[in-house]
Image 1: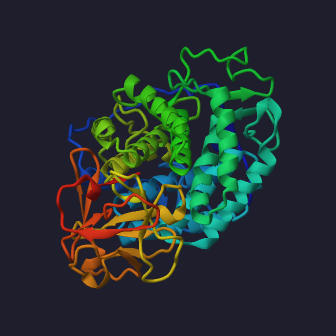
Image 2 (image 1 turned 30 degrees about the horizontal axis):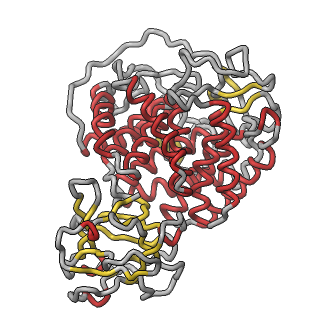
Image 3 (image 1 turned 60 degrees about the vertical axis):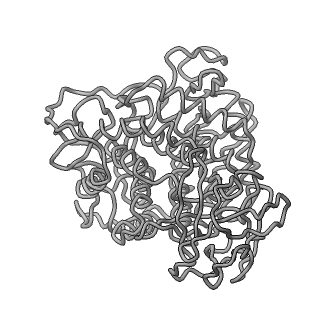
Length: 522
């Protein structure tokens, strides 16, 4: 592990991920923790514990950082370096998604991203490490999807394009260099995050070049770093064309892999699968997920090669993969087991847990980066698998709800062959009465039963959100994993109108138990 100082304005040193070396740990005093089953209250306590321990709301040591920010550790209250700041903000974005009606969580994420935009700047090309720029871009484009701040979106677009322009080359067969100043290696950690962020940019802008470039990056990463038989990954490829830490271009797989790499690769593969529908990406994601889950009852890799963090990337990726592909029942028990282990190993003074869920959290000074995984695993496991953007595909025909790319109020909703377009993406958010609002990501308008009609065959429309019962939906999972979607005002359910042609109207009908009234959320 290398300690490196980078400066822009007034930055302090920070831990840098490298491809070899493990941080040695000294013997530390432990606190005894109570065993407890996991629940939503524990998830909230883990979030509050991290915020109370690490979010700094006043300046320290003569610095004048924008406020608030995330401090480096319990005792070092300086601003955590740019990539760390944004890496941890993503954990708080998970916690916001878990409780998106919380005004305080919303405001904290907004304030922290704005702090980074001020302290670290909109243009991040001063940072030589390409993955640093990718993490910040990911935070900002995700923030755009959550809160609609266009300057964050524009920053993500600008910086991802810059990383591509300076990072991609035909050397070593393709891929992105990890650094812009020294071309010493191309790694999973400099390639997979670009794809994850680019997928969110594509959904925000419709710019297909981000998909094309993502597929190029993925093809290189898969060919050089991934074992398609086992799901393992090597760290990357050195400038000498050898696998990092090995003496040949051909990987030796024994002992390779860590949670961090599997998590970001899984997320990248699933991102491309959701956009393109290419099942090979799904198969790769499944392999990457299975390698970790099948070999680890709980995660105990406290200090992998990348540093004292990383499991949060796997928890987030696995929860998204499970929720978006009808696999929640398969992976939820494993996620819950890690939630429970995390909670039971916490420090009870702050309710914070380090990255090794097999041992009690030390009472010594602890890095904020090392604590964020407990916030993430608690949040993503408690988030309903329905929450977030989905394609709504009929269980019989496979046709998707489509708003025909219209932004007009009152535009009729139809069904169309799945194409991965934004006009087929719908964001699900739960209301206080447990019903759901379903919003088009293309138009920003919500799915509505017009005029609260009770008539069979009424075509659904999109409309400005007003909280009416005709815009609220009761969603019930069926035995086969699909969902019935029932309008609160009429009691009727979404029905494919017994049609399997593009442009068929999406209607409501009295529930009859037919598969044509059930929908897969993908």
